[in-house]
Length: 417
Image 1: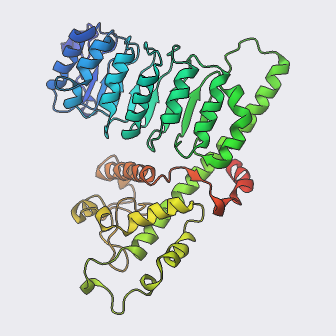
Image 2: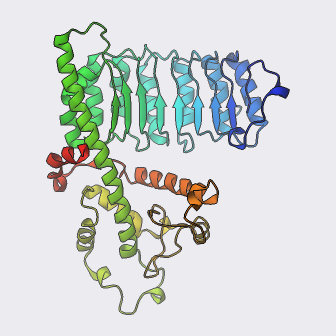
Image 3: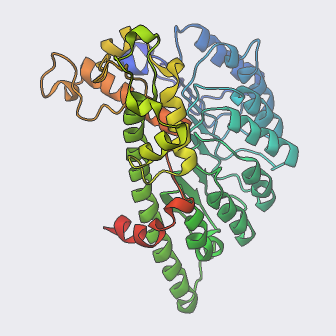
């Protein structure tokens, strides 16, 4: 682990295996191009780097460009899962460099950009949003950037369309209640897959629209917001508390529907894989064929819809199309090595996303998966693959369509229960 704290390296404890891929240089005096080259040298000295934590330095725009843009930068050398560039005086040029690094990036999961010098330029904001759309980023923090105002959100949220972004932190920005409609419109749109949203000075504008927004979308399951006024009177506090209670009920319902949607998607994949996936050759087919396969496609999908009644029609079609495609099957060697069942009853091969609930690695005891050994690692890997598959199928949030309209009235009570 690379760090600059003025300590004697001989007295520092030896880094563990889990942190040898981390480069941490907090408040280390890294400045502009020179500081970026120091970090690149540290990267080059390692076999792999997974985290790059460079907060509280002065890399600025030039350092950010040198660090992230090829051919010299880390963008050509590192597969980071987390990058921290908070408090580095990065402006719009640096944000453009970050956008180029994000474009088609499937490894970066967390990006922290708190307390920088972004101005909210419209062209830069749109480029950043489009880069996010092509990435697999899951967590984004823009906290404490007061120059990012209502104009920034008005450009950013309408252009944002990524199924992977789950956590967004917008606290201590230069927002006013004018941003409320933009946030509510994004939450209500099918583009939103957020699980957690942190924001300030917007709750008073958003809360009255929370219920109407959640009728069409139930993605956000957590929301943290606060008023920008510090001298609220009792008369103003009462409606605020009522709005907070209403918002809390909506979020409880959303969390319940999210869990139920994910369960239905995994159950549908298991049954659709067995029912829709055809053998590679006729010699593998059962004598007389599978009667279900002779039904029209519309009837097959209708029958399978009873396995996952909570999914929207679009979600069911995506899952069934995935289940019927032989290209989505994993290699048999990797499936067996990680504890997946090599085949399902009837000779059908199981694919990615098949739920492993209730499955146990062959030859393992009851506590194998909790022992921290191979069982625990493969279990965590399967959980990550399952989460990514749900995001790919856009089944990590409830979608309301005509066939599920009856759920609206009772979902709130079920979520509270």
